[in-house]
Length: 426
Image 1 (cartoon, rainbow, N blue to C red):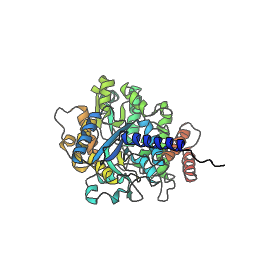
Image 2 (image 1 turned 45 degrees about the horizontal axis):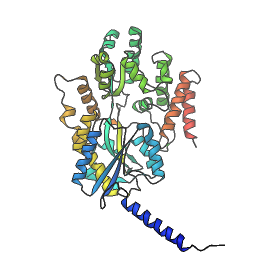
Image 3 (image 1 turned 120 degrees about the vertical axis):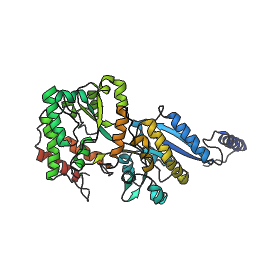
Image 4 (image 1 turned 180 degrees about the vertical axis):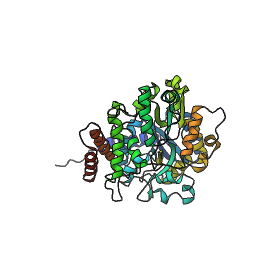
């Protein structure tokens, strides 16, 4: 039986409705009436760069009085889960700071705006072409390049002298020779590189530098070749010959930094920005540290890590979001941020600034490393392709490398098993 509402009930409902309307109209709004709001997420840039971003946002809002920017800084470890959740719920921010490796996974799901429809070729050409290409998938641009880092070889000149080595190795072949000489003469390791599946991709990148394609044109394993087996053998033999610390199987890149700072390894493959960290944590090691170009293979390729800005396809402020992303990454602002953060800019003009190209006579180790890393941008590339399941490929290769190192598999079997596992993935 349906009961009709009494006049008292109707009066209460009407009063509640008026109260709710009043509460909504009086609730604080994140942007004043008539203004558009752009929500901007970055990854772990507070509090060190709070002043920079507050100034940047104030400048943008002054130049664009109809737009207000709300900045949210997200911890590094939380970003992936937060952005996945927000994209699925269609509540994602308007501009997001990610990297091509992760953002390409969502690009494959059509989560991001196709920037080729929003940004003209003239504007795109202001960025380093190889770096812009890193944020493309299936011929479509899904991200705007922002700041860059590239590895250099930071080396301990004292250990080199003790071992009778006069320069840093430039190739993996030379590195193997240096590793043996260093161990024989000093009892110390030349370097540390991790084979923990979910950590650094340095070994995976080395395959590309050695001329080994990770996948073929159809997405199948491209490393089950003589060249691929030689790359497997390189790392397996270094481990079996005692030229790599045993912890490479269990410890991540953080261990590489710790060992170098403790004077236990002679070479640290890391960004130039880590020299400042070494100076703080291990000043005596910093005093004997020098930098050289990144170690590579026969291809001569150098790695670069890219941070980009992506815009969700479902943003309700597409024009304002694009305008802000281009403002953050323009020549002037990239140069300012690169100086503040000791990173590299991704625009041609900013990278050509004398700050990166001129080395003073009394240059510090940081200044020298900065010039080395900037010079590498001429041949640097994102070595691991932006593709679905790339972390799975790294896991498969690393686990089979470990099996060969521990004599659980032959090198040929490890390569064949890795290729088969990848090709038969679900």
